[in-house]
Amino acid sequence: MATVKETEQNLVALCAALLGLETDKTIFRGELPADAVNCVAVGLTGGGNENTPGMERYAVQLLGRYGTRDAAVEMCGKFNAQFPHVGDGFYILKLGKPGVYPNTQKGKNTFGVSVNLDVRLTK
Image (cartoon, helix red, strand yellow):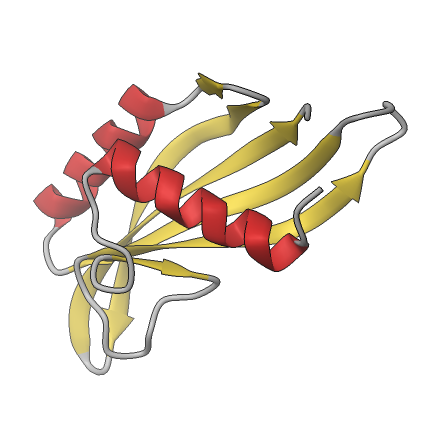
């Protein structure tokens, strides 16, 4: 099995492909860089081995920051279109609905977008 860091890196690569984003430019591992706008971060927020043999389960949050509400709503739509997602040896479920909310970043109005995911690795 992969380490937690490797799992998070793999999730970033998968989400980049699904959402049409570029690793380390418009999608990041763990957290959003302080000055970054119009991008998403993929962060493991908990999990690991479950009581089910051969399965690992992780709580994951996709968190974005956008300069316009329209851009945040568009990413929210991409979250809805791509999740749930089933792949070879894993599946990803949405926990609730993605949401958009107003935010302030260094004195400028921005818009956040967030969705929580349940990631299950079966191999």
